[in-house]
Image 1 (cartoon, rainbow, N blue to C red):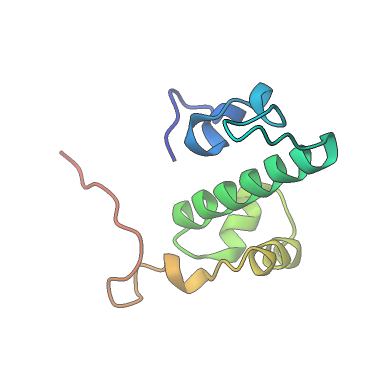
Image 2: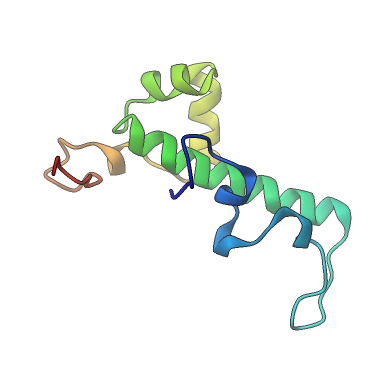
Length: 105
């Protein structure tokens, strides 16, 4: 996840640098979605990107991730399941298959 500063803004969470004020407007294909669909799309993207970032930061530790997010562990687990995000993907001890982070310079 890329952020211009220490705070994650909505614009940082939207895919492709898309700004929140452009969601639901006609695309280059002339397709326009209604309010509810646009809202659902933004929430879906936000949840997926936030959960991936959260699990990367907590190295797959759901309890730590839930604490950091201010959510109950079971509630976070349901969100992860909803989006098909598996904690094992983020574990550093998964045979090197976990996320890589830049080392100290």
